Structures are given as structure tokens and as C-alpha cells.
Image (cartoon, rainbow, N blue to C red; front, top):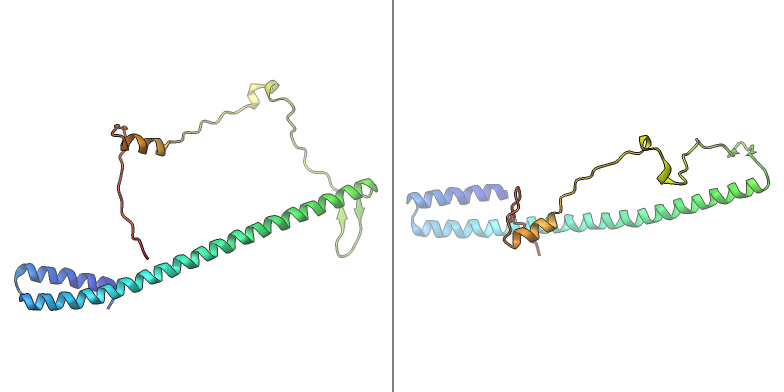
Length: 162
């Protein structure tokens, strides 16, 4: 039987008990059977949750390791590209014709280089207003008994496994 079905049976049993349709012994026997089965299902579900969390953590760890390796490979490739570029420039070589891997020194698009921000005309300056709410300070104020307009502390629950 599924967990939601057991929950529905508990609700049905509660209603029958309140209406007096079942004897005390019938109620006790039914509650014991349903509770044991519900507990077993709940524990099995919790074990599956723990296994999924562990697998998700293992995947996150593998992603982190692969990201570190990716950054190292990219840095090494960039270093080699710079190394090759410097040596080609020293030898005044602008292209190497090869059927497998042709190599060419090409110009990049022009990039703006700013030498002094203070003298740049204001028509080229844009300001950004960033609004950030400090929830930590609000939480401290509310916990201290202070009223903060538009805010309230909300206590929620979570399922703790293991």
C-alpha cells in the first residue's frame, strides 16, 4: 500500500472513531496495523531520500573536480597559445601553412583602453542603482522585538532524516 493511501486510511479511521461506529478494540487493532505499516513505509522513503541526497552530493563533488580540471586545462592551453604567439612574433612569422593545423596571427577587434576615468565626459558614464535588502539585519531587528514595516519572521519546518 502506498504512503498516501495509508494516510487516507488513518483519516478514515479517525472519522469512524469520532462517529462511534467502531469498538475500542477494533480501533486499537486497526491503529496498530496501520501505524506499523506507515512507519515501515516512512522509513523506507527516508532511506531513499538519503540515498538520493548522497548521490546528488557525489555528483556535485564530481562536477567540482571536473571544473577544477577544466580550469587547469584551459589555463595551460592559454599559456601554450601565448607561448606560441610570443615565439612567432620574435621570429616575425605571421602564418604557418599546414594541412592539419594552419596557424595565423590575426588582429583582434579594437578594444577601448581607459587611462584616466576622471577625465571621461559624463555622456559616456552610466550609473547603476542596485537595491539590496539586508535580510540578516532585518532578522536581527525582528528577533530583538523591533517592528520592521513590510517584514515578519516566518518559522517553517523541515524533515530531518537520520
